[in-house]
Length: 570
Image 1: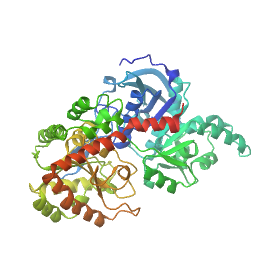
Image 2 (image 1 turned 135 degrees about the horizontal axis):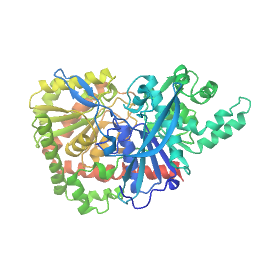
Image 3 (image 1 turned 45 degrees about the vertical axis):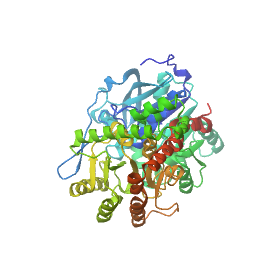
Image 4 (image 1 turned 60 degrees about the vertical axis):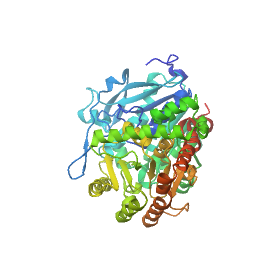
C-alpha cells in the first residue's frame, strides 16, 4: 500500500499494543468491541497523522466462525484465512524463552492508510515457524483460546515479544507505549528489564527511579468494571512459562501478592491510566482506590460505520465530515425527508440481506429493533423477553415489532450459549406480531449492516457492568437512536426524548431485572411505538439529534485527540 510519505520507523513515537485488532472484516484477528475499538483508534490516528505503530498477534484460526445446529446450539469452527493475501512478511525475527524452550517469533505487517494518505503500520506477531516445536507453533493460532498456560504464553509474546520486535525492526525513538487492556502489560515489565536484573531489596530508591522512568513511557487503558475480566495468573504458572531471572518478590511488589494481576502490573508501571467512559472512570477508581484513574470516553471511526446512503447525505450537506466528525453537529439542519429516505434505503438493504442469508422476510414498515453484542449473561439479551405475553399485547395494541439479534458467545461461556439458544427458541414460537431473527457469525461486516439499518438500538447490560459500549455510537452515526440502560457511554449520550430513551433510572444501584423490564415495556408501549407509528416528524427529529449530538462527539477522532493531549504529549 502506498503512503504519502516513506515509512520511517524512527519517526514513530507511540506504540499501541492490543490483544486483538479489528482493522478489516477479512482479517479475523478480533472478537468484538475491544478489537474493533483498537481498529477504529488506529484509523483515526492515520487520519490525524499521529505517529503510531500498533502491535498484536497473528491468529491463523481467528476467533471462530459461528454456526447453529438444529437445537440452536452454537458451534465454533476455526476460520480459514491466508495472512499472505493481506499482510507482508517482515524478515526480522526474535526469540523468547517460554516453558524452558526457545521460541522464535516472526512479524507480518499491515499498512493502514488514512484519508490524508498517512499510514500506521500494524505488526502481527507469529510463532508458527518450522523451527519451533509443534505446540509452540500453535501459540498464536487462536484468539482467547486454550488454557491458562496458552493465554499467558500469548501475553508474553504480545508484551515482551512486541517490545523486542519493535526494537529489532528499528523503532528506536518510541516515547510512549499504550496498553489497550491488561493483556499487553508485560511490555512494561520488558521495559523494566534492566531494573529487574539489578533489583535489590536494599536499593529501593534506585529501583523506584527505574520504575518512574517506565511510568513516564507507559499508558494503560482499562476496559472492564467486572473483576473477572482482569487477567490473573498463578505464580507457579508464571515461573513455569517465563524465562528465568525475574525474582518473584518483584512480581509480588508490582503485580499482586497472591497471583500476577495483569491490571495491577500495568497500573503500577503506567504514568497515565484511564477508563473508557466517565462513569467507568469513577467505578475504576473505586476498584483501585490507590491509583489516579482518569477517563476518556470511547468513540467509533465515523467514516467506517456510516452506511452508504448517509455518506451521500453527509457529503451533500456537510462536506469534510469524515475528516472532521465534529461537523456532524450540522446535521441538525438537514432536511427531515432526506434523512428518512437515507434511513429507509439502508433499512431496505438490511432487510434484503436478512432474507438472502436466513430466509426470514421482515417488513420495512415495521419498527425494527437491533441488538448485537457478545452473548453473555450481564448483557441480558433476553431481558426484552422476560414477559413475552406482555410484549405481544403491547405489539397488538401499539404496533408490530421485529427484532434483529446477532452476537457470539465465548466458547467457554455456557450461559452465553444458553441465551442464544433461548432467543432462537423464542424466535420459532413467536408469530408475525413480534418477529425475531438471529444473524449468525457476528463480525464487522454484519455489524455495519445492522447498526445502519435498524430503526432503534437496544442495549440492556446489568448496571454497573458496561464500561462504555460502542455499538450505540455506531447506530447514532446512522441516525438510529438508542434505547438503553443508563450505564457506560449512554449516561453521557442520553438526552431523554431527544437523542433516544433510557431504560431504568439514573441511580447508581445495581440493575434489577424486574424493574428494568418494567421500564422497557412501559416506554415501548407509551412512548416509542406511538411515536414511531403516529408521529414520524418527531421521530426524525430524534434521529437528527442522534447524529448531531451523539455522532459529532462519540467518535475516535475526538477520542484520539484527547489521548494525544492527556497521555501521549509526544
